[in-house]
Length: 247
Image (cartoon, rainbow, N blue to C red; front, side, top):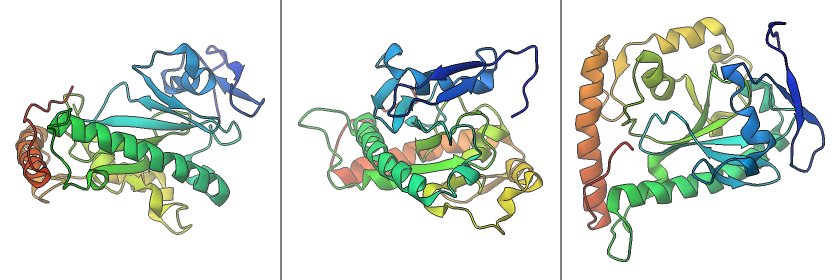
């Protein structure tokens, strides 16, 4: 990886089962995930959901949906690889899928709580909450260290502020984990294809309606769809409150 000589690189040893070091630059915002991989115990439980010898589960600092968390694999041989390269290793991919399955369950439970409330009177029994959660990687990650997004699919968040925020989760730029390893002839290996996907016109994730280049239009529509989506989940689940927010 090319690094500016004015931006010195630090190396740190992970607290996982391996003793190899993970390089990163404290000054590079694209390296901001590294400290969570290297020393998750130094971060508060409001950020760290769980750590295992193979991965760390953290909340995304800029959530693009009602629930948005990241799975950070701790293998130093993989952490600086592009996900398409890292997941060519099917043994490694199998381990990540196992951890991702656990994290998906956690996200589904939190989504249910946010939609239906908590306690014994909460609804949601009749809903497949995991079906409302997506697990995958970006074709062109914005951060240097390998990470997997586990995110509720509605995209309702005040952190969605521009085209790339929406299209990176609602076009083929978002690659579900089950599509990996990516075929060698998949166009998403190419930078120009990734750029094309991010520049696509807006399309509603739920109804498929197109909004051209209107960010205001898609944002308003997603908010309306959120209300309908939430209502449908509450009705299917047999009750609950209607106080879910993007916080």
